[in-house]
Length: 74
Image (cartoon, rainbow, N blue to C red; front, top):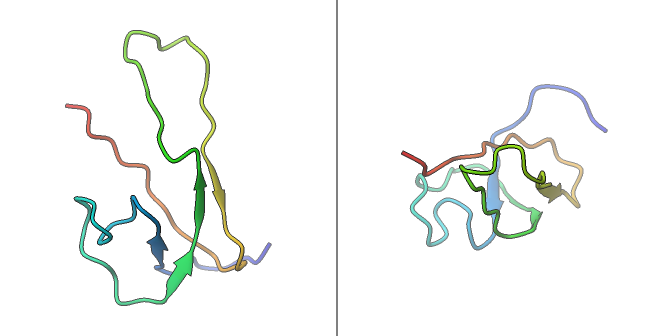
């Protein structure tokens, strides 16, 4: 794993910002393919002690990435 300051990267995929979603405009940085599994996560507010969900990001390039998990909950 490479260490150092993360670089701003554009995540490519169906839910990536600027690719048909309601996210921010695409960055001017390089495009990096990133695989996300599962593509959707469902969180239930009434089941906080329920089973945990795992989100996996696959980065086949080895480039350092920064990412944020955003929420649409009020």
